[in-house]
Length: 64
Image (tube, rainbow, N blue to C red; front, side, top):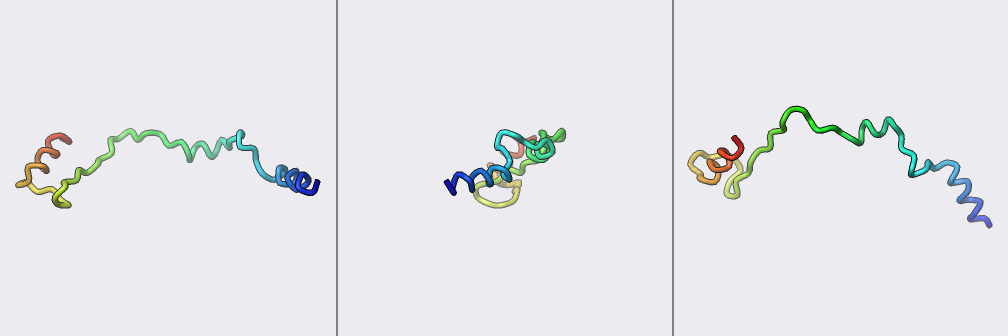
């Protein structure tokens, strides 16, 4: 009996999970950017691009 009463009081102060705040949707649902995002390519042997590395040159040609 006491637990039912406490759960009823908790229910008054907790929002329903089905209802979603319309302002919260603006921050949660981010649209895709209009400009393309630059994703740097990573070589498996070193951290930066080297023009003498065939893997780096191949990835550079693929990314434009």
